[in-house]
Image (cartoon, rainbow, N blue to C red; front, side, top):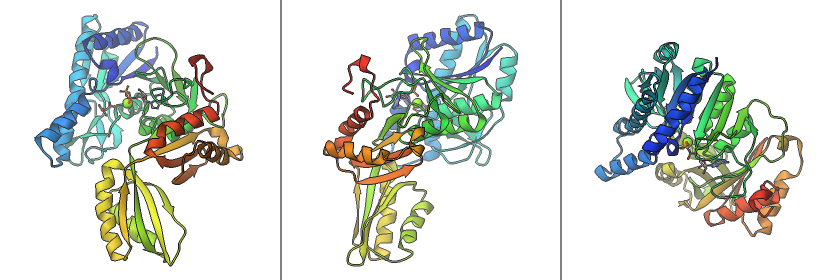
Length: 410
Ligand code: ADP
Ligand code: ASP
Ligand code: MG
């Protein structure tokens, strides 16, 4: 008998019919002799709708109340799913994150799972029940408040729960057939991957491939839980995210990110200690800086550019303007019209010349590179937002990642 954790995303539980379909799928796995714990997201776009409703009620930020509000979305889907499963004659119960013993840090909107007690989940499974756990939410023992894990957080709930329960597999059911060589909504001839290593998936997810939340991949890697990303609309095999894969291609896929903004501090005095003066206050303000470029100095001054999430751009601007005044820099500007394109592949670490090939392809398509960063298995470039589609398309074709049966141009 296997123990399976199945996670269903928002589209998969988007309406009553889909919830009944998900119930049938869970019951089939249960009747196949498996113990099944399911993790659900809020229905359809309801998290976005709750966020905009809050914006209509108040322009101020109330992080605690925001988490109370957003966790309601998952309560709805979990209860409806438990009803649909019981209708099919299988005992089921739904649990909030707090009831499931999901303990987190106390940072509202961005809490991290520190432990999952899971007693009630285990008890339910041992009694032959399907146990449904609300995704994306937990409880902070420090503040005694309900928390959320950040957008896409149900993936993290699912893989962390799978680790706690010692599950054989964590299945992530979603609205695409698996992990593709690029976002299939942008590149229709992208190829579905049979396998991706944890290391590659971490880089892809961290670079904008939103099909899995990066933190869920981290849990999978740390606790060695194989993750099967697959369609909730049919039974076909999806993509296995696991420790090692049969091959290590030079480029596994292209990811893109449009949620960042570029901040530039102009005319910074070119002296030791200045970078620390710029970035320390940003860290103190909780701003997460991604790429950093310091331009060549001229006249004893230099420009420093860095990227942050668009949602943190206002805070980053305020902090940086104060610093710029203090160090007598010329000024600060914020540019939200950027996109980050990343090539990821484990084979890259032993292959020379991949960065050069990437830059050549972009140059041949008249796409200007504004920033570059690398890891051993990733190369990322910031380009104009308007060049996003051309950049992803040209790299996908240039590295021959397309599926010819879908009529791509590679
Ligand atoms: P869910 O609600 O099921 O969690 P998400 O919207 O979070 O679904 O994730 C699925 C989406 O991820 C797909 O619809 C797709 O547009 C996007 N996506 C981005 N990059 C990729 C990729 N490389 N492979 C597959 N899907 C991707
Ligand atoms: N409902 C949450 C969101 O939309 C969590 C999730 O779907 O994973 O971000
Ligand atoms: Mg998701």
